[in-house]
Image (tube, rainbow, N blue to C red; front, side):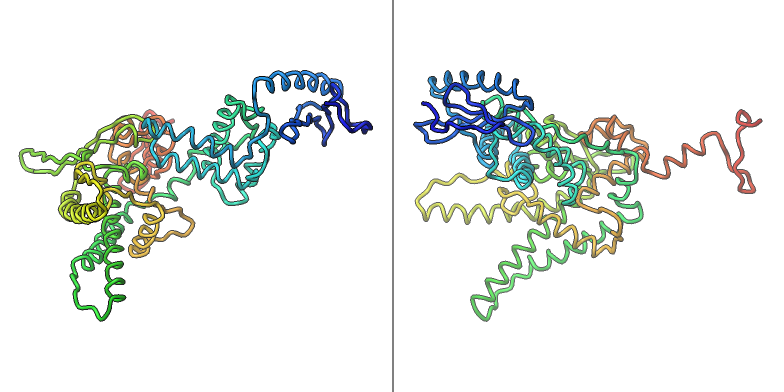
Length: 454
């Protein structure tokens, strides 16, 4: 088809009678009208000079005509559509148990932040490698942490690489601004963990908070003035169950240093109870298995921790609750004429009131803040979060003399990463290093060993 347009500007060039290349800003672009679809094909040629643009325009025109004969579509997906396509692709990894549903949700959240930046209606074909140059600056202005931005950019480029392979993008990634290096030796970890003298107050506050929930759960109130009052009471009991469960969630987090994403997905089949006896003591030991599909590093690991009877006490409370909820589900299924398969308790999630629904992160943070306030922990200029239990656990184990390899086996983090992240944050370790080769005199003065003397 010959173009109706016969007069062209200086920055417009006719290509084979029915296509046009034109300059927008510093770059040349290609445009071709498709009569059957009543739409234009548009593409950035990613060149600045006229001669190169003409050559690339002619080459692309021939490529388009050949592909059209094969039935290929040339209309760009929007950023929103492309994101949905990538998420559907990654859902196959969930079905294959290569990633967990929580990871897929994280990918979705990361890409949602990108959509807010790039615009949901932006065309993928019109994007260039420089389209996200100021992504870091925009996300920093919104308060995003450096580590968060690093993970987001990695996910965004993983999506673009997938789209490129599928023929949905002309680029396989964005050239993001080079990010500043994360300083692992600063005080950020120390500000995000508990002090040794605080952890006892936190544990005591958890017990108080659990006792408060336990009292409501076992109140067994029956005298209600009306249906509304009973409904409010039932809701309070259910909320108290959440409160009670999360208290034990924190107690185990404190004892094990397990990642929150792994902990909420633990099942009772992942927990083993045993007793260890020596000549004078009997110690309760729990063996925890973190399955590959719920592990951040996709490797199964097992480790043992000393328990204070927490999980056995918790199990004695939560299993009857799960059976009660299962009975309700069975009654509803029968009423609807549906088949019902009872939940095997060993397949139930540990930290769940029905064994099926996992704890939500927002709910965990809500109760965490309540406990921190109850413990009267000073959080000024500190980022105390549920993950702080893991920070404290690793720091405490380093101070206790465990090797990085031993801590690595428990926590599922490489020994080198533990050393880089945690070794320099504890003043006791730094003080020990500073005092190596020295002794204190009876007068309290620091004296060098003979081989340090002049």
